[in-house]
Image: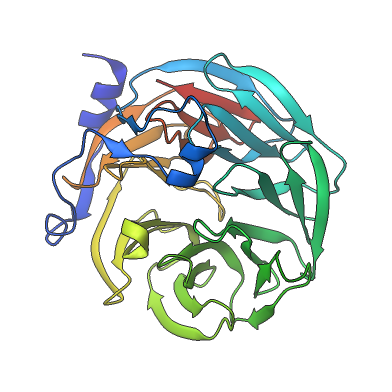
Length: 349
């Protein structure tokens, strides 16, 4: 019996999965990759298979002081990381090699988001700014300003990649349209700092997660609030839309991971394990590209893989002991990556 299986067996799992089976079909072995991303990759395969990772492949010392955010570019094994050392780095996850370093901006990186055609990258910074890079040239082509405290979260539209939404500790979310102007189209002042933000419902709505434990759903273009959900008893740390935004996976400092039906605004399933402790107010979970699995990191350095269809943990990965701050799973089905508070990135396969 391997160490990951022993850890899975020894963790006491809590959960409420009464309604989950109706939400998820049986696990899919194959999925179709995003059409825009596929078109941008000449040699890309049309389908991929998501396999549960079982072992640590590489450990990379990526950033001094900590690595806050990671993401894979669409339909590739290029991994982008942002750290507390005021750098953004691009890695080849198949070899662990550094391929590019982006610099020239002030502040630590709290969050990253990329356009669906892999043409530009946006970083949310502690310096109250967002930097936008042209990934073909590696140059910053604009800096977005307007927040008056650190920017904690950012997302780029999946279907409309000219859309950007940001949220910060200033209790403000801002909506930007890069085709119109480099100033925010609209701003909403809310009652609590924003820790996480995402477009949802085919980029027609925005979901934001807040320090008061609430999820707030707002309309694109106006940011007027349409619904609120009291999702967690402590800060929301992460949100992941599923099924084109019909479902939202939220995580919180209360160590619960909740599946919310955005049509009814009800929590339809929730899970946690007593072994798992969310490490920070900005700890990011991820979902596999086939939406069969959710991955959550823990303050003890462990990475937990959950079956969304079965509503239970299927593997626990143990590597470094430094807290996990973010996870990302390649849309090609493998590998999985985790970012740690000591600046390390782990590649799991």
